[in-house]
Length: 359
Image (cartoon, rainbow, N blue to C red; front, side):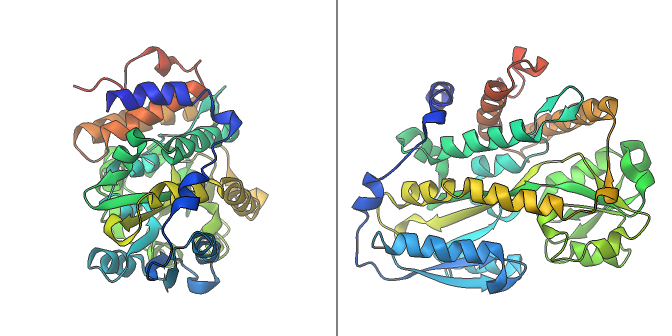
């Protein structure tokens, strides 16, 4: 594994030239039976995730692999069907796919890819960290494949869907201190969320990605964290109302991840699949920015430079603690730290061995 980290350091310097995989795509075996990809999308067949999956299926068909799509509006059901063999592949949030590959899901760790500069989160730099990381994991290399495979499951792609911003019922809840005793939605299948909420004195309320918005709208929780892409489809303005808002400090970048059973697909499929999804990065980034623009300007709540620095350290300390407890993958965090410091070498953390040398 250590050789992978050395390779990451070399590779990040070459990424501007682009990474193109053609031989693997051309070499995929043809004539295989259709494989079922189960896609979680709030909007079912009308959503962006399903729409992009149709493009994916077409691209793989051109390479001789037939993909049959099945849409799910319930993520738990999609995940369970993949686990039980009903689906040969799954596209869902990393919160669900973490069980199949912990290293890849490290991207969705608290504050792992965010870059703080001059007292504010630099979103362009943050997306550059994300781009380089996904490029690293999309590179055809035995070292990368070793990380992308866990048991009989391989990661077939990583799709960013945007920063998870805190949506609050009251604008006074824009500081950590004011969250003490507040009800905050936490996915019961992501133990790190509840641990973080308890760390700041909040009250975790068990939720699912399929119902946390209704709990927010119905005043069952005081805060949720979601990408802005969810604002209009899930009618979050009903929960924000006239007193609430969206805190302009991302807790993490949320990703969708595709995983598949290796035995159901031809050799080399993972590299071809990851390359396709890497090619969708700019398209996804545009969707994210469209989601950001859907938030009314008056709904945003800005964070002071002092608080931004404090919260960044808080997330970093929580990330380290959760990795030590086994809730986050240390290998994945080490790769992300290397890339984060490649993009922002002036950060004081880059002079330390934090997230690189573990006790």
